[in-house]
Image (tube, rainbow, N blue to C red; front, side, top):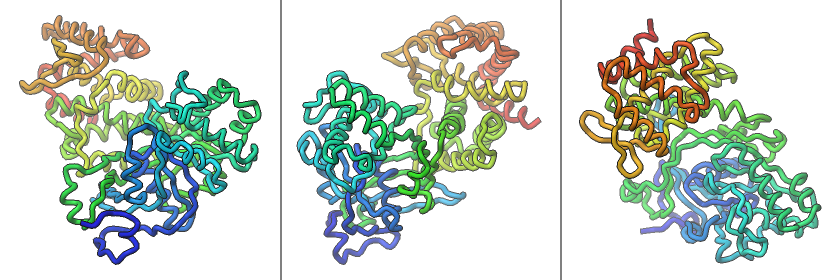
Length: 510
C-alpha cells in the first residue's frame, strides 16, 4: 500500500473526494515548535496550515522533540505530513473534515542532533516559538547546565536556543521572537519568561542578553481548548482502507477549537488567524476567558458527572441523550453559572451552546468515572465560585449547583479503601473513587459512622462542609446551605438519584 509522504502528493495518486489535500510548496521555516504530539498537530499546526492555504503566513513549522524518545523519526519518514480528522457536531449537524496537513517541514531530535537544533537559531526568517511540553514542562530544573547538549528541561533548551540567537544576530532587537506556550498552566508565558531569565542569570549569560530577552521577545499567556483524541487505534484499518494510503500519524480531534492569546494586538497582524475564520481571541486580559472556560465547560462536567453516574449513565454522550440529565445541566449552566460571569451575554451563551454540542459529540467516548478524578478539588475551583457569586448577586442559593454538592457527597460514599481508591457501589456494582488519600479517608470514616437517619445525614453534611482545608472556608457559614445540601442528600439516599434529579429539575421550573 502507498505511504503518505511528499512523493505521494507530487504524483497522480487518487485521493478520496472528501479529503482535502493541502498544497505542499517550499516555504521558509518561520516557526520552531517544541512538541510533536497529537494536540499541537491537531491545534496549532492545523491553524498554520489554514494560514498558508490562504497565503497569509507562508511559513513552515520545524518541530523539536522535547524529550529523548518521540515521534520525530516517523514524522520525518512522512516528510512532516499527516492526516487530520476533525469530527463532531456543529450548528446541530454532524460534521467530518479530513485534511492532509502540510505545515510541518521537518523534525529535529536535539538529543541526537544538537547542532542542527542550535542552527535553527541562526535562521533570519524564524519569528514564532510554540510549545506544549505537558503541564510539568514549564518548570525550573536546578540540575540544568548551559553546557548540556541539550539541557533536560524545556526552559533550559529554550534559554540555550535564545542565547544562540542573541549571539548570532549580535543582540539585534528586530530578531526577537513571539513565544507562545500552550501548556495548561495559568499564566504560562509569564512563568516561562521568569524561568528563562532565572537560568540566564544562573548561567551568567550577561545583562545584555537578559535585557534582550525582556525587550526584544514576546512571552505570551494563552488558553487553548480542543479535545484531541489522537491516533484512532480502533478505526485504523477502516480509515486506511478509505484513504487508500498508510499514515502512521493519523490524528483525530473535535471540531471545536479556541485559542485565547494575551498580548499586544499588533501581533495579530503577523499571525492573522482570525482572518481565516479561526476561533482565536487576542486580548489584553485573558482572565475572563479562563474563568468562562473553568466555570462553564469544566463546571458543567463537575456539577453533572457524579450525579449522572449515580443516575446510571457512563459517558458524557449518554448524559446529553437523556432529557432529564441534559435539562439539569442546561439549567445549571444558563440559569446559575452564566448570571455570575461578566463577559457579554451573547458570548457566554454562544460558548455554552458550543459546550453542549461538544458534549454530544458521537465520536468521543468520555467516561464519567475518568472525569470524576479528584472531584473535591475540582468542585472547589470550578463550581464553588459560581455558587458564592450567585448568592452574592441573587441573594439566594442556586438549586442545581447546590444539589451537585449533595451528589458529590453521595458519590463519595464508601467504607473501604483498596490500594489508592475508595470503593463505592452503584446498583450493586463497585466503582473506584479516586482522590487524595486524606480526602478518601475522611469520607470512609464519615460513611462508616452513618446510620441512614436524617439526623446522621445532617451531621455528615455538616462535617464535610466544615472541612476548611478542602474548601478554603467553612461552608456551614453560608445561610441555609447546610440544611439545603442535607435535604438534597437525604432525598438522594432515600429515593434514589433518578427521582432526586427529577425533583430538583421540576423545582427549578416552578
